[in-house]
Length: 205
Picture 1 (tube, rainbow, N blue to C red):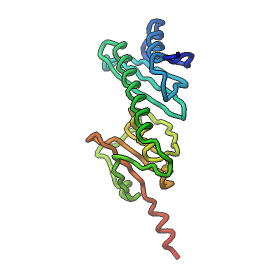
Picture 2 (picture 1 turned 30 degrees about the vertical axis):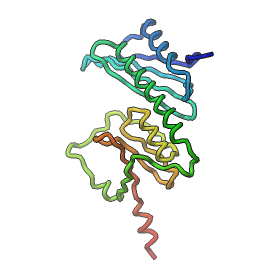
Picture 3 (picture 1 turned 120 degrees about the vertical axis):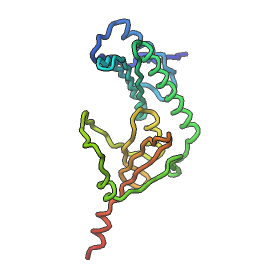
């Protein structure tokens, strides 16, 4: 019986460091050694980085899995890149197990899906526009963000399977653009901007 992932396309790239064959083989074997279970891995990418200004080494791994699922994790180490790789693989494995457990525990028809342990907060557009930082923000690394159609608990799962601070999604429950995010207390929150312009336009004769 097959117990490991084989023939999975794995790309290993380096930033500010050279990817040697032993290093490439180590990462490849670690990814192939992940449990052959749901979610099924379709493609894997590993990025190994040397931060010269901090003298730290980082490993970032992204798994593209079946059912449009993406699992990602990263770890840093002061002087041992192999330790960073091991720690990243451990995070990936835990998130895969968490995903499988959640599916088994909360499997139900879509029309019954509800958000769990997320306190929904609704802000008017005007409130969001008045929030300002004391320091002028600077866009250092602009990113493209694909807005996926999800139910709130699916967006929460997407957030738990990544290191991202938030997930922006098209809420299938209310047909609105919504955002789930990590709170400092370890809990989760959800923002659903309210379109006040629509109500104003409807009130005009």
